[in-house]
Amino acid sequence: MNAFLALVRKDLYLHFSNRRAVLMSIIAPILIAAFFGSLFGGKGGGSSKASPVPIAISDLDHSPLTAKISAALQADTSLAVQSLDADAALAQVKAGKLRAAIVLPAGFGEQAGRALFAGPEGKRPEITLHYDPSQAMVLPMVRGLLAQHVMQLVSADTFSGQGAPVMKDMRAQVADNTALPAEQRQELTAMFDSIARVQERSARAPQAGASAASAADTGRSSFTMSPPFSTRELEASAKADVPYNSYAHSFAGMGVQFILMMAVDIGVALLLMRRQGLWQRLRAAPLSKARLLGSRIASCTLISLIIFVLIYAVAIAAFGVRVQGSWLGFAAVLLAFSLLTASFGLLIAALGKSPEATRGLAILATLLMVMLGGAWVPSFVFPEWLQTASLFIPTRWAVDGLDAMTWRGLPFSEALAPVGVMLGFALAFGALAIARFSWEE
Image (cartoon, rainbow, N blue to C red; front, side, top):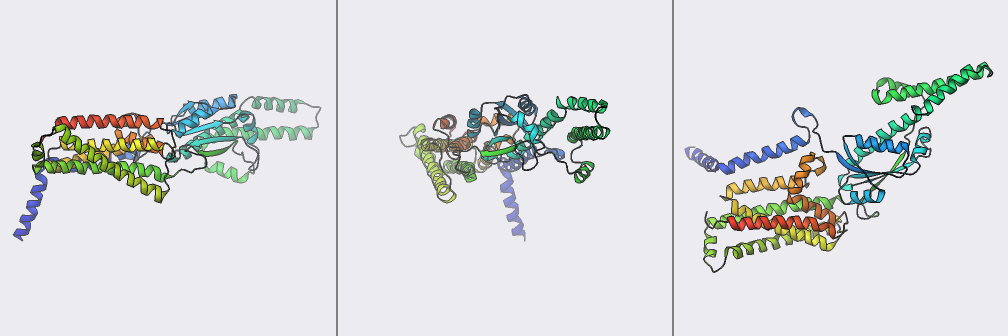
């Protein structure tokens, strides 16, 4: 028993003697848990304030009613609305810069009021709603806000606009017109009184909501107002006849994550080589530091590229992923990210003090980069400041670049910015690693 306790005591001592490794094992879950908790509720269970969802609205009618609808959507704090023409709005959604685009058709202002009483089978104006299929969770929110604002404004325009005073005047004229038979006057005034009650009920509806009283009224009455429009929802992807394949985005995000994890292993392996004195032996050869470390970057780049190509080969063969955009741009994004991975692994080795402590720190940095890059959680749920900050994270550009070349079907020009940013990070990581690399532990 004494021997058993001695072995346990020895393991505990060895583990907790490496203070940096222990500290990283505690800090990593705390930071990640705090990150997700702040996004999805926070303390007290209240919902966190997400950044407004960027959408566009295209008004093809240019009527007073559609102008009010546009203004109401722009005033909604849940949305960040741009007014664009239909083609530009669709292009922005396809590029991933907007989540949805609402197109109000010509003649909407004239047709919407009549459609309130058209019944289930009546003709309604059709609103086209283009949406980003990779973030389809936005669609129900945009659809609901659109229905809310359109219903309120159309009913207000119909019941509380210019038509309401006219009907009141007509009722007064009918009531005072003694030339009409008394029975006819009574029927006409009853009709106007019924319209007034509908106006009053419609005015109360936005405030009362689905109350028990209104539910009972609905059950007793056969009168219903139909939605004054219908929607046609279209995926804004590469081609109209090609449905969105969610595997394309998931393979991009998980490929980026696990290849970065491989960079952590490469960096730790370099630290182990240094501990064993292998780097000192190589340093004895007539080779410069830049050449020795550059060869490691080149070999790690090739390893990362081969693995990523194999991952996408399986995605294409087994999961139907397709490069709908530029193959050249796709290859350039893969190569740039592979070079970034190799430079990141070398930087880990250059800055690390020991393999044990460095592994925990590097895994924490990798997980944070993957989260902020949008591989786990869509970036639109981040606060606005965090969305801006994520543009300084190389993984954000890697995921966006792969999405652009696969399911988004964008041209080669859309790969230039992601490739340029990743090459810039790779150059900075590599230069810092070569400058800071120590041959001795």
